Figure 1 (cartoon, each protein chain N blue to C red):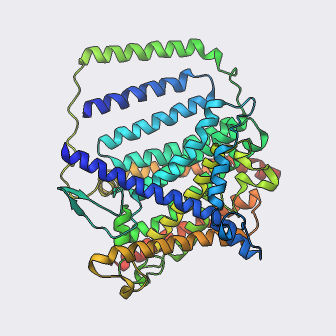
Figure 2: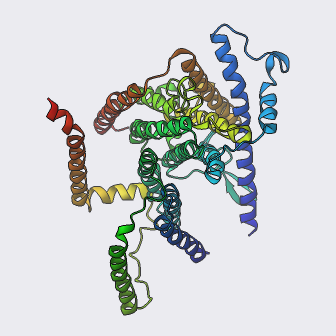
Figure 3: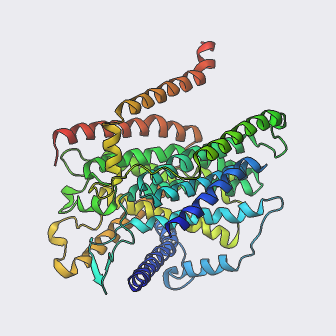
Length: 353
Length: 168
């Protein structure tokens, strides 16, 4: 009983810490996105709240919190309230299996405890994919329950898009799973130890997964509804797509879910293709006791690089048309992903590690 | 504790499954189906079949049910459009199935057969053991299933290309 309660307390505090960091990152990202976009477009971005506008997320949060919560006439009230939760919870729940530091096990009063991953389950990758697919329900239901044409169109577009691109995410990962021989994110990271030439994106033998990484990146941009794949919320066509009718905290939930999904996808790219917590060169990794400092540092740096990539892509590319989106997903990405699996498995058979 | 968890999952599964049929609004039925899939996945987790649980959610909840919802919304089915004329047929089939279930339960008693011994204690995880079984013991059924899926895929392609081929 004593063991169980210690275990519970440790896990709860760990969940609290991870969720705190994730939500804080979401707040930072809302500012960072506007700043990065502004700099790329030769503007200043938000400058009014605090020095250089750094307190903008606080002001935004307060504004959204005190806004009137409007449920449109004729909307399905239960589904309308349920949809934002169904979007946010799957986005946050995926962080449970992300290892963000060395795979250590410490002993706290007779209880084994892994400080840098909430739960190292042996189907970690599938767990994330499963909950990522649940996020689609919130979008579809939100679009349907709003009783508005634009919302419904956004919801339907999103359903088709998510189904098409989920497949590509799954297939792009298969190559990595073949090389690592495990579905646990901790074991996948540990298989990439020692220098950037061992990361699955670059590892020359049996086959570098860089193509798979590009497919994963494109498909996950589409999964997170970001430009150039933001058709479910295309503001020049559908007002704001599936969340047109939402306001106040419910709107904020959709907003937070989008950013949380971006962080989750960046964490996945880091863990699956770019070595997770491992440093790019062996001598950049602190030895012994302080390995966790460099581990967390490299993990964060890689994740922020991918988040920057999201903003960069948004500032560079125009939105695809709907038929282009479908053709690209099914006729370009899918065959390449399948080809990658065939080549990887054949080469992995001839050059086993 | 295990029995309690099982009873919870079983009760919710039965309730959600009945709601799928009872509820008039097709969106609500699809959502009760979603609840049911989740609880079936939960049941798999209690049986230490995590792989099956994840696949259950990815395939059924993540892909198939989303397609259902998509179609239901696209057709915009109204609540009133239910299939009322199927009443007598449904009643007949229901009575037959119920009688069968009751007879079977009575004849066998309420004892449950002992389940086949699991591979507990084996060092490999259940992903590995499923893979091994699928490609050794159950290779033949696996190949047949893939052939059926291939035929279904070709059929779908031909059906969707029918109009185009005739016009040429």
